[in-house]
Image 1 (cartoon, chains in turn green, purple):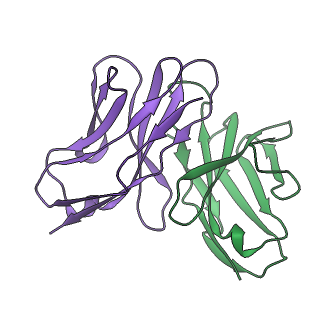
Image 2: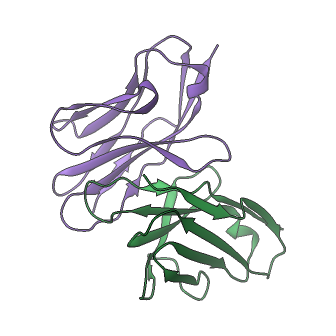
Length: 115
Length: 114
């Protein structure tokens, strides 16, 4: 299994500002994933980040709002830009093999509150 | 497209009693099925998975799940609940055909009373 460190664990931000969330994995992985978990709801995939290529965004999420970096095989960042109260959520980093039978492993999440 | 349904928002059970958290799925091919647990202020922890083989899968913390292809279900079970099992449980599915994203259910909150 992979050990994933996510920082910060929580933050309170002013609307209109941006927050960058970091995700560090203890082993090299091909694919990293960013999820959003809105209050009382399930996980929604934001984007898939592969090293050396642009992230692939899911419907409803755009790069200008959620830019992602993936500089190497153990690290990724997600930025939440120009925040509004609607962006208040838990943001989770995840890694997995990317196909079939492999389970996903998650960081502890970043609880973001926008005021 | 694949989907997962968790019909119960909350399940209440007394400590020592058996528990069941329900999950049904829909995929076009054969499913890969997963259960995760989320404790307050924590990320998701993997509990168990069904890939192929025996329909009864055993996982962490005494949990098990039963795969039923005809009913397209993958219910999570535990013979004797503990208060510490109280948490949010998510079922997830992926279609075996190539790379498909992991799709999560809406979650079921389990409350185990002393």
